[in-house]
Image (tube, rainbow, N blue to C red; front, side, top):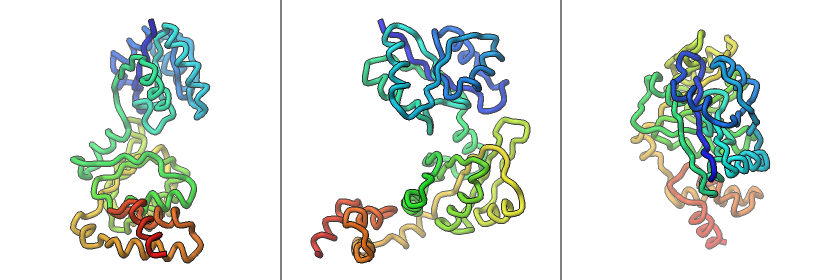
Length: 278
């Protein structure tokens, strides 16, 4: 009989937030699949536990394959990230998807998640939100992602590392404007925890003079629905934008995709209209 894959949340900073069930699960499983075995070793030492560990933090599936084969052979596994709920902006999601495909039982052992913790404390609207994780690094992909979010009326949650924060704030300001409200939540539950509600423009000015420190969750207010409705482009506007990209040398499919990003229209319908006008 196959074993069980446990998805075990770990504290996002303060070890006093360790749920009893998390500690019990670590103690009961046969082995631990960790994002970084060095980080998890410190956690297990804190709990007074010794467990065989493997790292799953590789995008190549063969690392996950070894873990899945051990579970199929009857071993129970606790999969955990360095902090918070695993498989969120994390390659562990590939292992979970494959476990379901193979009929392996998946059991969540929940705890704190940095994005939800930040949202609750941000002072921004919480009824509807969208989690974007880390923005793409390549400039073109980042521009496309931010363009797609310009009409987003839900609160937007982002993760960012300190050495990339200034660039990300600049990009967000260019996309959403300096007056867009944002809460910067850093080092949550740790000694230097800080939650600041401000605007993108004020955040840019502050970090121009101050070095970012710690890991950040950015909670960005969504766009004003009335403003989005007033600014919504027509299909003719989007097709015209695609034709301008086409004239500049962008292939038809890519032109349709870029022009449709952030609009109510799909790439397919813009592409069809573009080709029909050829």
